[in-house]
Length: 348
Image 1 (cartoon, rainbow, N blue to C red):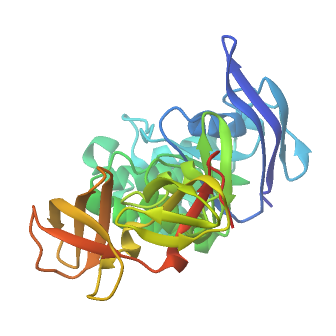
Image 2: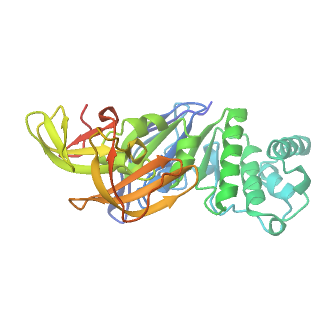
Image 3: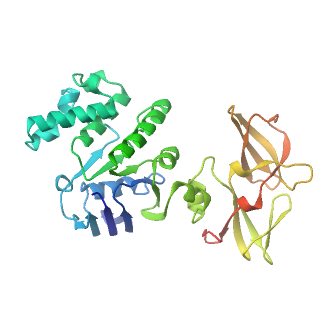
């Protein structure tokens, strides 16, 4: 089993509170990803779960057992760090077996666990090499293997792919997802990379300033962000946001687009770049002048500015014949619109 519960967790450093009363339950076998801007508390929260930091108040439970005051070694968790943290003077085999030897595990059991981890991660031919003889991706596999051999209650991964190049990150993402499926183990994964979060997670925890903004599945976060922060943080390029005034249940966007809305007073209308398209002859659209055209092959990213000076970004399929400086109108289906109140909370 590997269920984890946080109840009213707070953490202060030198009188400054950085984690503010977090409540969270993670089910056995879930892969939960913590995301948020730098300084939001995601790595601190992971270290609290690991036992590397003690909460100022609140409870941490693993499989229903209070572990708040237990040290890291007694929680049955395995952590994979961004820096790999391999012993440079040891071979891969020795790195994998070292922790088990310290537990005085029988040699036959150690050999079996190392062999199984090596098979699972395809590093069997690297067992006699030292870390300096390995690529970044191979080192990360060894770091993950060191966690696997411990057969932990849960895996904690702190930005494990951030030191890899873009292509290798994509490969390792797929390998981590496959590994989670094979192990069926609980995993908590910290990243600032939205693609990692969206492709790996069963659920994503969006953090800001030490508080949880929303916990949901990747697609629910994308389709129904709970507030303006989540709307702007999840999705790339970021959602287009227009501040306007709703009167009599209607709001007007740049270009005079008049829309019915279930609100009155100040509101923010959001439209994802992927939901915009060049307007047809009889279709209402937001006028904009193109300032940058990013032709990516399968899609084109258009960066424009509206007549009222607001930035506007659209992602168009294919390779439209558009150029910088061109004026065009961008339309959308009102069903794809997001609406937020003056306090940033989702409406409807």
